[in-house]
Image 1: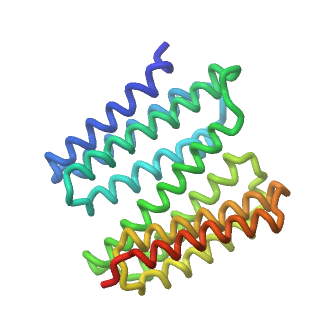
Image 2 (image 1 turned 60 degrees about the vertical axis):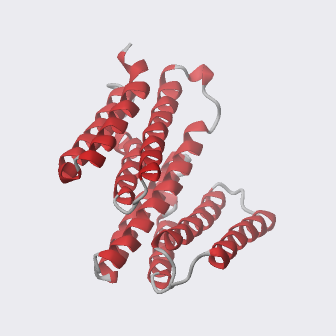
Image 3 (image 1 turned 135 degrees about the horizontal axis):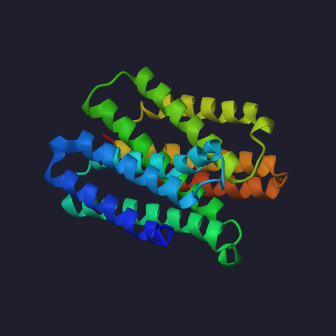
Length: 253
């Protein structure tokens, strides 16, 4: 069965493409198109014909596509070879994990563990937010791209991740337009504010990712009617303390 091999073959193709990028960086556009086609075709094929409509296919594809795109952008800022190879391996592996979860959910549902697909999507979305935000801050520092342009790109990216998070957690999209807009607006303003911190681009990206995790989870739990003061306090302490430690230990320039 071809679909059974997709979660194995696709990560190998992605890893090979990323490794080729290290040796032939001037082929970056062709390699990126190859990676997009690889993850796109794999996702659509593994879902199968007739199981889900076109809109659902695109929503499933959003997570691995944004995760992979963010990783490719972030690779451009890594100088140490071991770090680049490790990130390439991680991108490939977790794309495979995502596809494996889709396969089990559709074809071996009796083995599927509740919320596995939701959890892996949430984790990859969080990683994508870190990688993408860090890359945008990197573009601001090294390429001197206008901050307002990067902030708008961040707004669109946040919208896509938030929309996918709501959908994958089986929340009615029509019940959350205001929440989605508020989250995007808050992170848009935070992105603008964090850009003025005299810290490294990946530190700024980490702050945005943690804030995304905090706001997105509170919104998700609110829409699921599971939010209470204890949960708010726990998330506030965890995320607040994490950001405090990051800023305390970060190198200020």
